[in-house]
Every structure is written in C-alpha cells, then in structure tokens.
Amino acid sequence: MEMALMYFIILVILSGLTEGSGVLPDGPLNAAVGETVMFTTTLTPTETPFLTLAWTSGAKNIITSNTVNITGPEYEGRITLFPSTGSLELRSLTLDDAGEYSVVIVPAGEAAEMGRTTLAVYEKVSSVSVTSFTEKVSNVSVTSSSTDLVEFSGSVSLSCSASGSSLSFLWLNGSSEVTASDRVQFTDGGSSLTIITVTRFDQGPFRCSVSNPVSTGTSDPVNLIISYGPENINLILSPPQGYFAVGSDISLSCSVGSRPPAQFKWFLNGDQLPDPGSELRLMNVNMSQSGNYSCQAFNSETLRSQTSQPSAITVLEKISAVSVTPSTNLPVEGTSVSLTCEASGSVFTRNWMKDGSDLNPTDNMILSDNNRVLTFDTVNRKDSGEYFCQISNPVSSDEAKYIMMVNYGPENVQIKVPNKINIKGTLKLTCSAESTPSARFTWLFNGVEILTNSAEYVKEEVEFSDSGNYICQAWNNITERTSSSAVHGLIVTDQLSGCAAGCIAGIVIACCVLIAAAVGGGYYIYKEKFNKSSQKQNTEQGENMYVNMRMTRK
Ligand SMILES: *[C@@H]1O[C@H](CO)[C@@H](O)[C@H](O)[C@H]1NC(C)=O
Ligand SMILES: *[C@@H]1O[C@H](CO)[C@@H](O)[C@H](O)[C@H]1NC(C)=O
Ligand SMILES: *[C@@H]1O[C@H](CO)[C@@H](O)[C@H](O)[C@H]1NC(C)=O
Ligand SMILES: *[C@@H]1O[C@H](CO)[C@@H](O)[C@H](O)[C@H]1NC(C)=O
Ligand SMILES: *[C@@H]1O[C@H](CO)[C@@H](O)[C@H](O)[C@H]1NC(C)=O
Ligand SMILES: *[C@@H]1O[C@H](CO)[C@@H](O)[C@H](O)[C@H]1NC(C)=O
Image 1 (spheres, protein in one colour):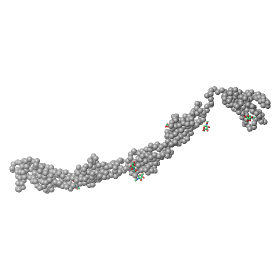
Image 2 (cartoon, protein in one colour):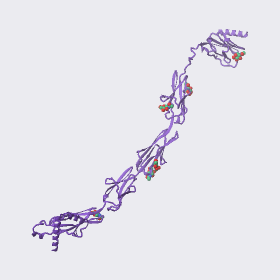
Image 3 (cartoon, rainbow, N blue to C red):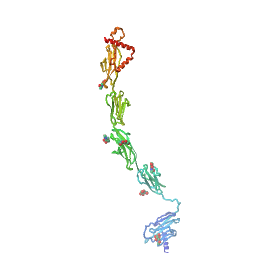
Image 4 (spheres, protein in one colour):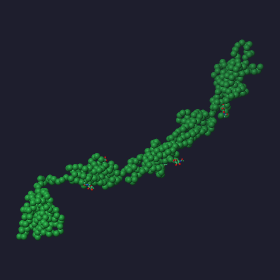
C-alpha cells in the first residue's frame, strides 16, 4: 500500500513538471526498432543510494525503486537501471516505446531531481541498407620494413595505414599499378605489399592509394635503395692497343655496374698498385711498367667484388740506329763474308731485302741468330747489290742499307783492235777485262812495258816498227790478281801494198810469229781467228812470214 501511495504522489509531482527537461537531455533520442537506447542522467555518480528512483513512460511505470523494485510488466527483462546515476537502458525497442520518458530521483537528504525527454523509434527501411556514416579517407601513409636493401637477398614489406572507413588499397610503382605475382604479394586486405626477392628495378617510388566511396587519399612516395653489383666489369685501354713506346701516356679505365658506386683497386701482375679510382693513368711509361694490369671493384653495401680480365701492356723502346756491318769491307769472290744487322731498341723482327725485294736465300747463304747474321759461305759476284736490313717492333721500325760489292777478276782480258793497220794510221788498242773493281791495265810490246794505267793504247802515225806483239795485262788491286790478254799481233802495212816492185823496198812487212807467250785464252782466241780466215789469207800470211824472215836475215 505504501508503494502504491508513493507512486501516486510521484505522478502528482510529475504532472506538475511543465518546463525544462531536468536531469535528462532535451532529445528526442532516436533509435530504430530492435535497438537499445540509453537514457543517461546528468547526475554525477554517487555511492549513496537514492531514497527513491522512479522511471515512467507516459502513465506507465517502468521501474520504481525504493525499498523494493517494481518493474512494469512490458519492461521485464528489457531494462537495466544504473543506481549510481539513475540512468536507464531500454532494450529491444518497439514502435510502442516511442513517447515521453520521465525520471524522479530523490537522493537522501536532498531535494528531488526530475528529468523528462522523448524517444523517437524508427522502423528500419530495409534490412541491408544500414546507413552508417562514412568517414573521409585521411592520413594515408606508407611504412617500409627497410629502405636499404641488397638485390636478390631478402624481401621488403610496405604497409599502408589510413584513417577512415570502408577503405580499399591500391599500390603504385611509379605511375603504374603494382600487380601480384610470385614475388609480389598483398596481405592485410591489400594494405601490405611484400616484395619477396627485391631487384634493382624495385626502387619505386611506391605510393599507396586508399579510397572509399566518398574519397581517395594517396601516401607520400617511398623509395627503396637497392644495392647491387659489382657486375660486368670491363677494363678499357686507351689507346686501345697492347704495345706502347717508351714515353707514352696510357690510360686504363675500369667500368662496372654497381650501386652504390664501387671502390676500385689496381693490380700489376697481381701486385696491388697504390692508385685508387676507376681510372689509372700511366704517364711517360718505361719498360719496367710492362705487365698484366687488372682492376677490382668492391661494393661496400653488397660486400661483393669483381676483378677484370688482365690487360697486357708491353712497353717497348723504339728501334733506332740500325746498322749492317760486314765481316770485311772488301769481300772477295769465293771467300766467306757475313753481314750483321744490329739496332738499339726492342727488337722483334729482322727482315732482309736485296735490291728492293725480299731476300731469297740461295744455297750459299745462311741466316742465323734470328736473322741477325747473313752469312755467305763463298760469296759470288752475283751477291753484289743493295742489302737492306729492316728491324721492327710493334711501335716502330727502321732499316739500314749496305751496298756489297764482291771483288773478283780480272778475267777474260781482251784486246779489241784491227790486226792490220796502214802505215801513218792511228793505232788504237783497247783492253777490257771482267773485274771488280775495274782492273788497271799495263801494255807490253814485244815483252817490253810501254804504258801503264790505261785501258787504251794510242799511237798516231804508226811506223813499220810498230808491227809486233802486243799484250795487255790487267791487275785488280783488291784481289791482287793479274791476268794477261792473248798476244795480239799487229801488222803495219803499206797502203800501196801490191803495187809495182819498185816500191817493195819501202814496205816493211811485219810478221806475227807465234812466240811462246801465246798461251791461254789469248792463244785460243788468236787461233780461232786464224781458223776463221780463208785459205787465201793463210797463203798471204805465209808469204808475209817469208818476207819477214827474209828481211830479218838482211
Ligand atoms: C532494486 O534494483 C536495483 C538495481 O537493479 C538494485 O541495485 C537493488 O538492490 C534493488 N532493490 C531491491 C530491494 O531488490
Ligand atoms: C594521423 O596519424 C598520426 C600518426 O599515425 C596520428 O597521430 C594522427 O592522429 C592521425 N590523424 C588522423 C586525422 O587520424
Ligand atoms: C616497378 O617498376 C619497374 C619498372 O618501372 C619494374 O621493373 C619493377 O619490377 C616494378 N616492381 C614492382 C615490385 O612492381
Ligand atoms: C719506370 O717508371 C716508374 C713509374 O713512373 C718508376 O717508378 C720507375 O723508377 C721507372 N723505372 C725506370 C727504370 O726508369
Ligand atoms: C700476363 O698474362 C699472360 C697470360 O694471360 C701470361 O702468359 C704472361 O706471362 C703474363 N705476364 C706476366 C708478366 O705475368
Ligand atoms: C785500288 O785502286 C783504286 C783505283 O783504281 C783505288 O781507288 C783504291 O784505293 C785501290 N785500293 C787499294 C786497296 O789499293
């Protein structure tokens, strides 16, 4: 009864409440059918229990809490009362729950508090369209598990974060979209990108583009630094050749694919040189700098290194002062002679030429000591000529000339003359010989020396006394040999030969007598001449001989 009385009193009080909403918010509170609504008072929570707490909806008691709790039948199991603030939770709303709600709170020893608000309950339009508020995309950012990577060793994960709801993710690599593959994977609903084995081409920039139905946001770009190499090392010589003259400047440059740029070391025949850098400059080189050069590249990030193929450099002295020295300055036919070809510089090849063409060594020639010495076993006059010795190496070439004159003779000494000459005529005898150097001639008349040092014997206005035996002697001052011509008989005749007997007295007939001197080639030629003569000539000769003998007897 007491309870019923109280309830009545409250109703009276509430009906008196006309203004303001008291300890409850103005409302209306909005909620959909089936949902839960919370009527929250503005009271600060208190430990001390309220004397009385009463919630009503319109005229209906929801709960009245005093010494006992009385819950309205239609609210059984649907409400929770919060004793410290007097707030009320109402669940499983129906359309009938819409309406006014009031609360009366009587704290111990204080004035009663009151509150009033309204609740609007809506039916859901459709079971699928839960119209929830869509937050704009913001704060899109990408974080990377690492930005310094080594090619082919390890993976990298990029994750994208963003504020907002209903987000979908898209990854960009430069300006193109990243697509999944065996080495590119997406996880966490596309917000994470994992590159399994990075390559140098995966440097990005990578960006994450996040979107929902109402907006789009894109992250700042993330660049990956992927180290690789060294690889494809290549050593280039400039000028591009293997042989250099002493004093040349040579530049060697080493190129390599590497990120970050490689550090270089240089080696000569395996020994490290002090020079750093990708280019090695050798200035004014000398021969001791010849050898195999190589470069080595080292990448301090990948800790890998690569060494080039060796490049051979040969520094050579230029050929100079080529000379051909004969074993004797006066080679004599039939003796042994050698020519030696020398030069200063780095000699690679010697090549002999004779009279403008490559030397064709004949049986009597021997080339020895790598063509340094050309030896003539027994030198022949045909070996005379202009000899060239050409010495070359890959950086230069030079040659020397030697004119060899093989001395020989004299041989084949001959007198060219008429056999007969008229008195008072001019006698001109010419002697020839095969000889190098030219022979010196000496003339003998009937065994007596009449002229030296001349190939010609000239006598104007010959007398009968000039008839007789002429011999020419040839002398070679190098071979120191002498050779004589055949005896040449000369007859000085009278122009009127065969005239009247009165003039016979004035005619001296010289006769050629074959004396002991007629030997050798001279005799042969002489004899030949006679053989060719006609029988008539022989007869004449016989007569001449007879006349001569007669005159000698006189
Ligand atoms: C009334 O209900 C409140 C909240 O559920 C509870 O704390 C209190 O003990 C109840 N009173 C009685 C007498 O059952
Ligand atoms: C953006 O992100 C930063 C750090 O992740 C955070 O401190 C900040 O509150 C975020 N801003 C928004 C609008 O979400
Ligand atoms: C990024 O783009 C480059 C070409 O620009 C491509 O080579 C590389 O594979 C791409 N990386 C990823 C992870 O898509
Ligand atoms: C050759 O050149 C190198 C380097 O310039 C130098 O150290 C060396 O003494 C030279 N050798 C000779 C023999 O000149
Ligand atoms: C340089 O290398 C070549 C082979 O590549 C070798 O025959 C030669 O002996 C080497 N020279 C030096 C000086 O080591
Ligand atoms: C040989 O004679 C020539 C002249 O005919 C002369 O020039 C040369 O000096 C001579 N040689 C010797 C070795 O006597």
